[in-house]
Image 1: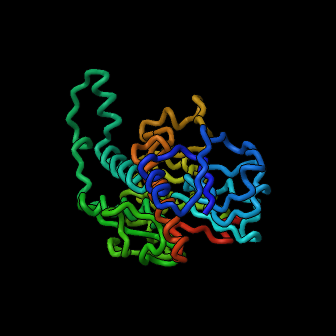
Image 2: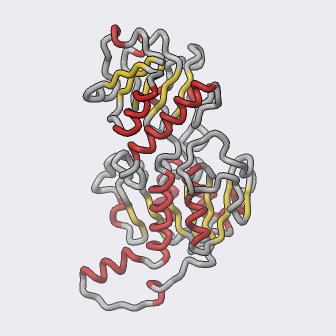
Image 3: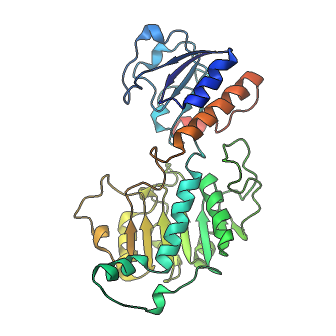
Length: 336
């Protein structure tokens, strides 16, 4: 196949594909910036595109059969008419399962022991051995709203720490199917949760939690999904963690919940503006940990290796006529 690579190479993977002798590869050097044009003459024979963003002149790819994205998000494909052109698309879901799950567990421990206040005490030379700094997480309950790869790896780590794991999904928990998985991680068969809730059981799910972890993508259906009703359903000692997307939780409702004590606190890696303005009240809340969307990013040490692993596996699957990993449906590509 004729392959155009608009991504920083992972040399071992690139060499292995070249060594197979079955493909013609062209590597953009350097990779193009977002949405720039590529010389149409270089696109006429391309059948496979590995990229983060498709070129601005996407119409100049008449023979394209498959796009592999280096990102988990895929909104950059909206409006390209891929389904109508029968172009398949796959994303890099699974690349960030490990680092984001580790962020989740780190925040659970930090919130439970109020590490933020302990660090302030250190800066002020305050010797305070209060009981709130000595809390354990073993035996507490973490709720995962959404059970994709990040939720599954979070569940695995939480179970190792002795937490109970509750899960809320639309259709229950099953095996992962044809999605990318770092070997030895996650919950491939869907057997880790202690209890599973489905759509319509949100309030019951929330009422029994010590920690709520948001693990769903931002879509039309999830934008603003969590508001006053849901936050008030949590126990007042519960913490909210959002490594997913800020707008899934209604901003005004979250600020009230933190100010008025509906919940004990929050850890937020995704936000309502980028960068979060210095005057935003979340910066000054003592019960909030803010991180600048770094729970998982392209600077993670294994990111490039895993993206190329997905691409290499999918290239083999396409040659064999097997289902592709992380394939996006027509509904997803339409923004549904």
